[in-house]
Length: 285
Image (cartoon, rainbow, N blue to C red; front, side, top):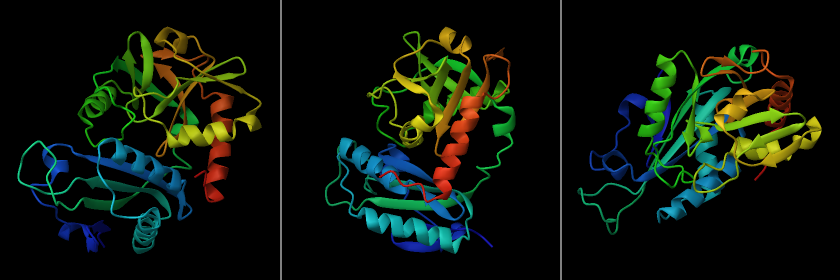
């Protein structure tokens, strides 16, 4: 049985789903996306993802004709129709379809596409072994705080990682780590978690926000600052956070082992806390 997807008001078998060849998301990358995790058949922090969607759309002057409640209902219907227990729901909204011209078209209806993907988050094998990371220059545009569908630079970074036998790439700009190709980058020094400040240079991670909400349970402090690749290589631990990785230990960067080359206790504890948060319904708002 094929997946049921959502396209512009209709729930359809994936093979029947279509959008216009003139859609601005396809032609210009003129759109925004979000991915909400699903664990135990429940959405994890979907409200926060939709708040970020609203912000991103506002930054590109794309008016959303759907309420948050309507979008949540579509998420839940897709989960039900696809019997999804664990995985993610992908949402993409574009400015709509119009003859190709750079300025915003008038009187155009936005396109909304959503689909599910079944994935193993909680018992992902990589959580036991940790992942490998490679560094790469950050070639993205200046507004990385907008979750744009323009993902060519991350695609190239992820491909470089895959060809290097790694699972993630950390972007480097002006000598410091910005973030992962699809994740927030963290290091641990002593009893302090370190990740760079939010700005136009990084995406405001939803999982980052959740981790910080529960940081007191680890007994650690949080230092919001930039860090260099050299500092990461010398850290006691490194890890990433994202909706699809949850909290994932990093054990090597550019072939160099972090500390003893094994997943660190802090990352593993944060992962436990986050999974418990997710199973309870995972709502930060």
